[in-house]
Image (cartoon, rainbow, N blue to C red):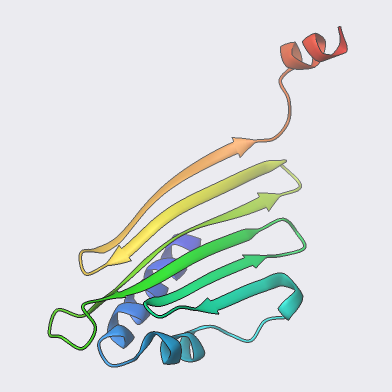
Length: 124
């Protein structure tokens, strides 16, 4: 489900990149969030975005407008997001890139619980 949402987001970004500057793209795509949880920094080439929610979920993203004002103009978005499930003590992390060649993602799932042998070693 999250992958589908990111794929849709990447498609929206790609469509808007051809007719929008990076600054107006930020205003059009990102919802208004409470300032204490996020940082949004427009740059000359694009933007940087960081979000850390109280539940431990995080998102870091960077967008760069390549070849601005030319027929080869494209927006490249790179980032990571991670979520934490308290019930299973599991963290998932996804690293992604969205560009003219599409959306590419790699993911990793980690269980935060320590294994039995590790606990025994730590206890002495």
